[in-house]
Image 1 (cartoon, rainbow, N blue to C red):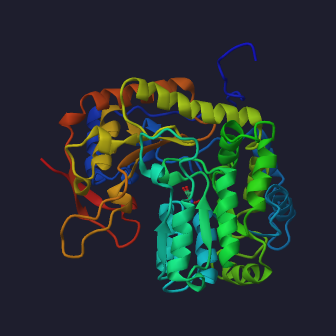
Image 2 (tube, rainbow, N blue to C red):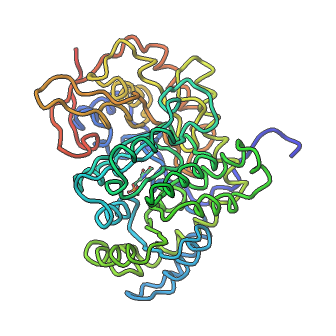
Length: 460
Ligand SMILES: Cc1ncc(COP(=O)(O)O)c(C=O)c1O
């Protein structure tokens, strides 16, 4: 291309109005929500970067696909279209639809994991960790050391630490490791990609110990794009070829189609293991629905089938990864510390670097996320000690998380460059007065996944 500007490779077809609540309305909303941004109503938010999950805009082809939805309870045409696309991209023969990613996790871990087991992952996502722990097993994060250093600029900071993986399986014994999982891209570790070489090394360790290998594949296409851009030997391969190679290295995958399925709902569990698939389908019938719809409407299956094809389009992926990097570069140029290099779906602000005066047990990343909302109505999410810290049973300070981040996740095909410019302005303004921010205390919390519903009070 002659021109530098990478444009959105689509034009807007229908729009949704954004409300513009003022500062007083935002303050009142925060108080009502107990300083938990999950408690806000969508119309109290100006730019919603809480998650990239299920928040993207669908294409006209996906809406057209929805009109073709076949709502037959068993054996619907939509299921076979969905199954054929998933098989084609992944090469995995057993495809089980689920209503979203965590349903696939719940079913996989229910049939494969037992009490006392250890499940290694580069970094477990919150629902993945919770579903492993719910089985009475330990979820162990084994990302490479650079993966928890926000400032280190390296191409594949989502990689699994192969030595620690081998040592872990050796230490606990292969019979207590029901599977190894790798999350692509590594959402809780800054959205960082995993290289093909690392996936190959994990496969080799799994083969050495006879342990199955599963992908948490939510952002497989974004990971494939990073491999194409950064890993020698892949520059001339298509994202589809790269994705196919990634999946060829594993025994199965869980997927939330709310990310790289470009859909508002949906997911799947896919595997090469027919026995595991049979057990999973039995459980699916109990909790999700018949195996040809898995808790989804026929029209949802159609939307995912089309979305999985569209996400592998090079023009889309080039724009997607570039637009995330644009936000990252704009705020970093003004000295805001972020996880470097920027990940695929989100910019992660380094709250520990920005707010060194707030200790982890006073939740610096929660404080930063709240201020971004108060200042400009921008909703991000804390990925730090609120989400991953462990409360002390004796009432002492929480065990801190490895990093204190605020994730600004970019919904797919939803916001324009001016929305992103506005967001950058808000981030830079808040960062410039970071020393005036103070911490919070938790006043109420549930036993699982506390970040969704905990209530906070500001200190001071
Ligand atoms: C890496 C990862 N795994 C699993 C999930 C769970 O997917 P879902 O929200 O569809 O249940 C998510 C959702 O954000 C995720 O990012």
